[in-house]
Image 1 (cartoon, rainbow, N blue to C red):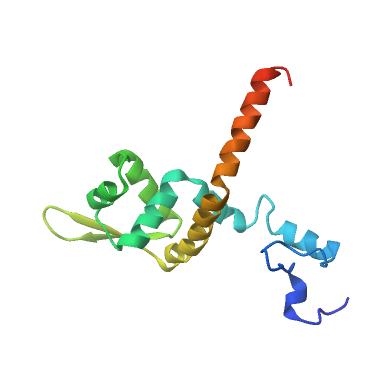
Image 2 (image 1 turned 30 degrees about the vertical axis):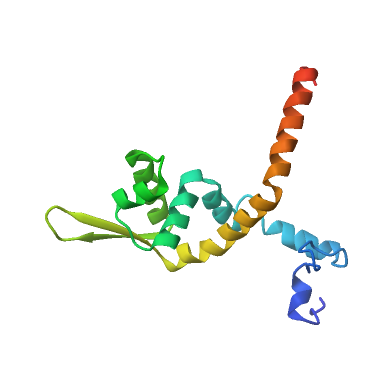
Amino acid sequence: MSTPSTPSDDVPQKDHTGDYTADHTADHTADFTADFTADCRARVAFEMLANRWDSVVVYTLGAGGPMRPRALAARIGGISAKVLNEALRRLEYNGLVDRRAYPEAPPRVEYALTAAGRAMLGPMRAMGAWAVRYGDDVLEAQERFTARRRERPGA
């Protein structure tokens, strides 16, 4: 078994556009692809980013700091108390937010991002930048697809 000459030989390299270069071997590609199989850790992150409200809550807490649920709902807008509560519980379960209950009457609760939650902000911003750059292209592709399906219903 050979030893990689540099640490970067273990991962596919990106060119100046951010795309993976063609000079890495099939073995490297296979190793990289294995990182995204059904039971991989990367899937956890993708699933968290995929939930509409979870990502909005993380982003809002990242921008505004610790908040009480009512303030969080007001800042987000368009989210019901039930859906917000479900999102906060999922995020707490996944270790992205901390719930802090204060021993007061009436009870007061605040939510704040954990280190893991704060670390999600970078990938979320990158996804936002991607959406700004390619969102119109995606919507146009969806419209073209839908129009083709209407023209040829059996296709």
